[in-house]
Length: 199
Image (cartoon, rainbow, N blue to C red; front, side):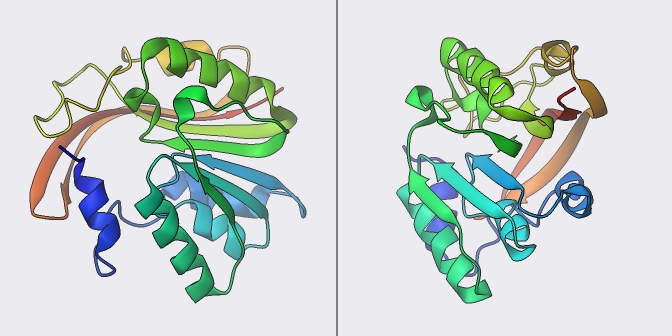
């Protein structure tokens, strides 16, 4: 069984995960020239592309080869460059520092030990004054049936804020939203979202 997004990546007309997140667009004008951005679990690039279009150096990683292929196609269509590659985040370790590191909708897909290890490594490789932006599913709601096999660790609500208590938390939201994915699949998700700046 493949997750729904794999089918979406193969359809050039599908809007698999929607437009860039609002907090991503709000962060763009705050970044100094030459900033480096890492998008982990980038999918087909909805958050990576705006950073590249703004002239920043963008690295993007996803487990899905279809997602990376579509991201690179979209980048070429927009005339921007993104260094993107296929890799499972379960065994990924950042090997350089970044000004922004994003994980949107991916950390809960990792097993608990891999997830927490990666968060600590993300924090350690973020430059002082840089940002981490995360969005995760929480345990406030049961996971939808078609997603449950892939969600290894829904976060306890509020845990993200605890993990960033030594950082400057610029945004933290816990909320529920409903959306529709390709194929007419409707979901309700409980989300924690954070934008935190390293002191």
